[in-house]
Every structure is written in structure tokens, then in C-alpha cells.
Length: 292
Ligand SMILES: Cc1cc2nc3c(=O)[nH]c(=O)nc-3n(C[C@H](O)[C@H](O)[C@H](O)COP(=O)(O)OP(=O)(O)OC[C@H]3O[C@@H](n4cnc5c(N)ncnc54)[C@H](O)[C@@H]3O)c2cc1C
Image (cartoon, rainbow, N blue to C red; front, side):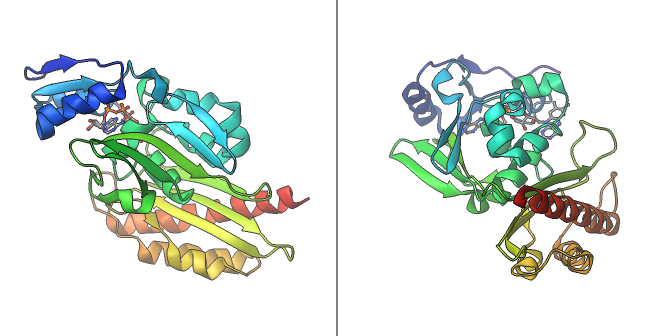
């Protein structure tokens, strides 16, 4: 099928894009990489009156370090994140996770902002950005505001964005040098959306106990799910096999997965147990390695 008719605009400035959003209100759609929106248009599941293509707003494509934060412009392509030495060095869990998104052709076009605004429950970036305690900068007619990732993802494909707002930047807190990380997911073929996924980070104190951890699941809840009971359990404890097993079991208990053609809820819960265990083993081992 082909999309229904729409007016097409390609502003080069964010203020022009905002003016168009004001004019068309919820009858407009932002077009970034198009990797999620184009299929929806082609199947006529979305029929916007206006398409506002933001690809010419090149000022919003960047990756830069600002003190203890990694700032990534909303229009930054997945491939730029995947190949960035800065991301690999300062935020390796993001570099690891982005490789799991679709295929090279999709990563060449898809953007950080598009993935977060689309908020597919099994997408990698919403989970990683939540795990990194990310903050999202949003621009609207009244100016700029910042939303915590945990508050941005509100429900199934639903985010805290008004129809007249644009997601402009993602800010990720950098973890200490001695932190260990892991990203794991299970899918049928590499490139498919995750049946279940997890982003995990662990930092150690001077006694080599867990100082801080972050465990966020994808694909098992309408939004990225922080495994808070598992995080609490790890704090102040040595990362032993027993603790990891218990933390993984808690994460599985706390997940609320769907049943669909890819697997039942029980199967997904079992996957959570397995991938959280693997992720914590890897993150813990990397943290110990980085301590040396
Ligand atoms: C075959 C295939 C496999 C895929 N596999 C995966 C996968 O494994 N994991 C995964 O996470 N994704 C996957 N994707 C989706 C891909 O990652 C998309 O790139 C991403 O979900 C959307 O990014 P985009 O830039 O293409 O956004 P678009 O498709 O252009 O937009 C998506 C939505 O976000 C809105 N939007 C975009 N940018 C902004 C902004 N700056 N401010 C406000 N709203 C905005 C749009 O209006 C639209 O509603 C796959 C896609 C395909 C076609």
C-alpha cells in the first residue's frame, strides 16, 4: 500500500518545525529516520495531514561529552552511535545495545530521537537510556524542558511528548571508570525485536561490593522496566553466584510480559531469569576487571 496524501515540509531550523507543529497540531507527524513511521504510513495505520521531515535540521545530530554527561542529539543515527569511539569509551553499554537494532540499513537511517519517541516496548534504546538514568530534552512553543527517562516512557507506545513538542537531546550520566556493564537479549534472528532484553550496570566500592547497580528490562512490560528489587538486593553485597541467582529470580517475578506469537508470558519470564543472570555475571566480572 501507499500512504494517504499529506503535505510535506522539510524545515532546516527547529523553530520552523515547531511553527509547523503549532499550525497542524496533532494532525502532523515528525519524520526522522522513517524506519518506524514509514511502515505505519504505508499501511495507513497513521494518516497525518502534514509530515514534518526534520532531517535537514543537522544541528541536532551530534555526540559530545559535557563533563560527566554524554549528550546525544535526537537526530543522531544509530550507526553514528555504534561507530563512535567516544560512545565505546565512555558509554560502552550503549555501543553494545545499538548493534542489536535491526540491520545495517535500518541503523543507517534510524535515529536516537525516533526510537525514544516511538517507544516500542522491546526496543533497545529506551531500555539503555533508562538504565543510564537518562534525561531527555524536549522543545516546545513555551521553550525547553527536561524529562527523566523513567517518566518519559508512560505506556505502550506512549511518551511524555505533547503534539507540539520535539525531542531534541538525550543526556546520559557517565558511570565511573570501574563500572561493569552488559547488554543481553534473546530474539529469533539477530535484527528482530527482542523477545526479552536487559541492560545492566554495576559499580563497586573499595571493598569490591556493589556500590550501585542499574538493571532495566525490555520486551517484558509496556515500558522499560527497572528491576528495582534486584538493584536493592545487590547494593552493598559482593556479586556472588547466589546473589545473582536471587536478583535474576526477582527481576523475573517483577516483569509483566505479554503472551504473543513469539512466546508465552511464562516463557518470557524464564528468559528474563536467564538473561539477567548472564548480564549480571558479565557486568560483575567486567567491574572486577576494571578495578585492577
Ligand atoms: C525491519 C526493521 C527492524 C527493526 N528492528 C528494530 C530493533 O530490533 N530494535 C529497535 O529498537 N528498533 C528496530 N526498528 C526500528 C528502528 O530502530 C527505528 O529507527 C526507530 O524505532 C525509529 O527511529 P526513526 O528515526 O526511524 O523514527 P521515525 O520512524 O522517523 O519516527 C518514529 C516516531 O517518532 C516520532 N519522532 C521521531 N523523531 C522525533 C523527535 N525528534 N521528536 C519527536 N518525535 C519524533 C515520529 O513522529 C514517529 O511517530 C526496526 C525497523 C525496521 C523497519
